Length: 290
Image (cartoon, rainbow, N blue to C red; front, top):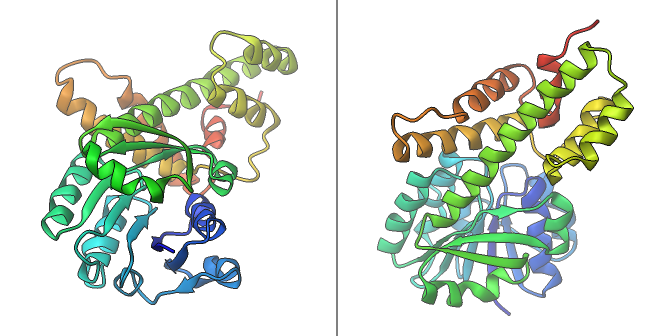
């Protein structure tokens, strides 16, 4: 069976790694904390002491880490996977990184003989564990076909946007829209509360209204109830993604008025006081006691 090195066992990565085990692949894991791997090891996964160790003899290396810095470290750091990955290894970056970073990693890893795809994902942790993520791929068509056997276990939908970096462009667009929606929702609900509206009626109206995207539907319930248990996406990660998107927007839409500035600023404030909490707690920044 194919050998997978999986690096990064956060809320999403843990379920994704489990899918490779379900598919019968030989899976070697690395994460900063081994504790997050223990249940996967009990299911048959192997543990590596570093990304460098994990990549030995791997047919594909899949990474799911926090940001550009973490991505560069696990691929090209002193103990990075690129040190031992053999020529022809499929390098699949599922992390949400910046556009410039995705393209740079493509150049760096391709120069080492690896086949690089930027492949950020959409979906919640339960979708990751069920293999029902949507995969947003940037790669040439031939490389995507070579990588497909390593994508099918984790995703029910594969969208090919074009060359390396294009999957990341779409992911940043998607997450920027999410940041704007959630920040706007928090402000709207805070206004409704302060104005004394019946919040159950407000919630029902939002759920049935034209602005009720899946993000708005999910977060409006949590915000009205002030129930942020079971965080699926933190304020720190939302801020990071929005900041990467803003950087891209400024390069492509120079001189234009960008709503992204407000979203990034809102999440910058949230990151200071609640970095590891659910992003929906944004409402606590803008609401006030009557």
